[in-house]
Length: 264
Image (tube, rainbow, N blue to C red):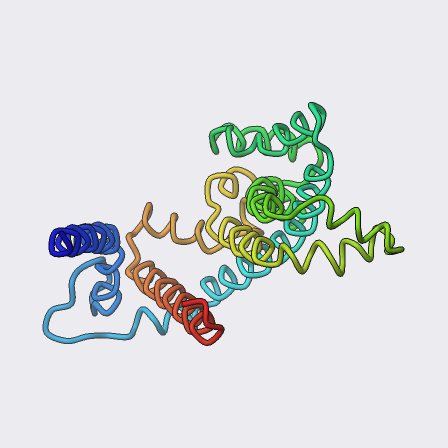
């Protein structure tokens, strides 16, 4: 019996790793392609070249796109986490049909297809004069990110009893003190996860950005899209490799921290 369980477990683990490798294989292809000496996407033959990595750190256009994406992602993620956390806490306290209606409205951007959201943003931003501007791009990313924050924080709040908040208020804490010293520490993992989701969503957003930006706002995903559409620039593979490396480093640091804390 134990031998059968061991065999089944090994089979499940093997299938899981096979699925992971199948999903990661297309990403891994960008690593050797980024070292090609050619000016088009191809596997390196004969020798390796770092020319495309030099372009990323010396070309003003690529550097500007990096900085714009980082700035927009940081600001929009900060605003999204602030608004989404407050909204999730409010919905956690309000258990009524009105609260569910508000939740549905907040989660609506998750239901609407991206192209529909892009058209809506373009029409509204054109009337407000926010096209191709930092405020317009950041505000659009905030609208798209808040639902993910609400979902992540609400998942943490689901394990928190409402009586804890009531006990804090009964002991003399005001609303701010209860939120700052009781609720937020208890839902910190959800808030951190929401921050990561919001940042990644803003950093990776393309469809809406294509509609509401022109020349002034030229984020990294948009530059990569234009590079694929116009001349298939191998620098795109270099960007993909750097992003993949950064992701692996973050995951490794997270695992190390959890192991040090005794969670693994």
